[in-house]
Image (cartoon, rainbow, N blue to C red; front, side, top):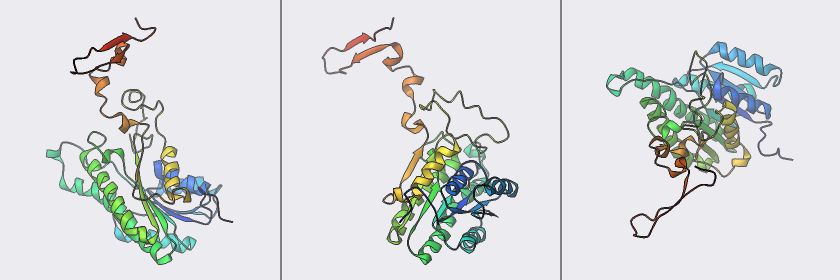
Length: 294
């Protein structure tokens, strides 16, 4: 009897950037749903904490490995370690990330730009390259989920290098999905918005209150678990015909667009008005006040 869709019993996942934020939430969720996980992170201390946290709920199903996703030997070693520890590989989550270079374009150092791309774009490429090799050799297909960002789609959602690298991740995801489809390997991306993680504001409490209601329509801040559940869906049998997609998880932030109606106060809703404008047709407009509006 096959396992119900959405569970991962008997499956093996490799998760990068697994010791905090979205990676940690994804690792714990996959463990909760029955997977064995090879968790990778550059932060050994945070990795030890993750192992301790998971020990009671997933004994023998979590292994941690220090890895730098910008180094091909580290990524290849992590894939080999996953198959060595658990006998197979079914899912790769390329999540590791850094905020990267910031500042005016005219002042950015080339090495800072390259560092940003080495983690965000090269790391996804390497995880896909070596993960796909293992999945192809094993046979039977699998899934790869890349963590991008809404910064991939427009300016203003992240620094220049970060946004450009995440745009590369989205495009690479689509290319990889087409190339790997004959092997029954699905490749998708998830694009988070503003999520409460240490990544957002390292070293200080996160006050997202002013953001809510101004640029993000959904009234609560996003949590790592919100993204992890979408990652799990894309990795599961429930998404068995989904590949090459970039799924946005942002509380409607991107859908809200620039919000010029709010900024310029040109939306009649804010003045308590309702009706219809017939533009330059020559027909009369209709304007009335909403009930209860002075």
